[in-house]
Length: 329
Image (cartoon, rainbow, N blue to C red; front, top):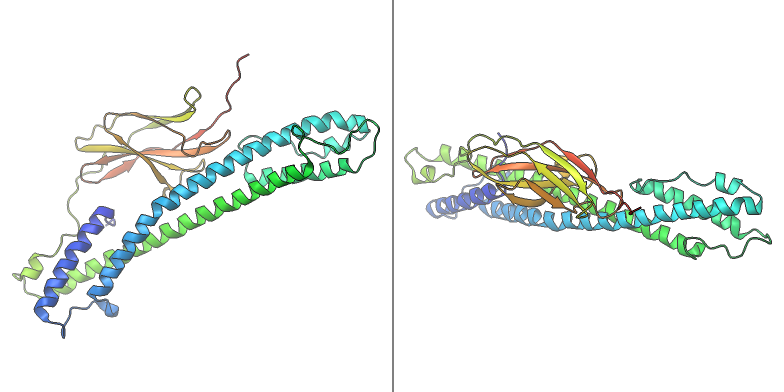
């Protein structure tokens, strides 16, 4: 059996608390109904409130991940461009100073979507070679050596540290979102386990025709079959500067809507996905900048078909890379 969704949890806990309170009123304060491990009505209410709060925290934490990732991606692309500029300039300088080793020691050209640790390592190598050039005395070499449109080494090193800080901020944001998600799922299991135990305790404690047994909430209502999965394709739309998703139509009779979910990496991970948008049925495409804030950024997506009873089924996953704008010839 699968766990109920958020709306079902809220409804079930509300009904349990009404039922539990009525039993307390009948039994009296000296003979309360208590579950195992001294789990009382008050503790159950507190547990439900904790779940609601933790669940509410997930949305801003997901937003913080998206923001930190976007910032990190933009800084990463800027440094990749700077490394390319430094390579070009040192390639010109090396034969002038009579030492091709400066150019040969440079990192190989990076792609815009290169991983941040790789970009940081390449940047530090460039900075080290830059520092060596600053120590040279040569009649055809103007000191202090400046690259990247007149930047000093200190300015370039500061940019490295800004990216490093942004990268750590992203790691921290991702860790916080994962921790909260795990806590939310853990509490949900506890909440549902106590609802199940409460039902069993009431069934054992009261006769079949008791109003308390009749008022017990139903744990699993029939929600019908899951909808058919749609098939999704994803492309980078250079005209609009967004990723574009196009999917087949879900023909399930009780389809309510579609839900676009995404991950801030090229491989889709269900336990890390974020709801990007709710799309009305009848609409079979959607454009988004989610996870695609800078050239080389890659995000992965799925489209879920959702029925009026809350059943859902996900599509295949697709990844989209933000491409550079092609300049007119």
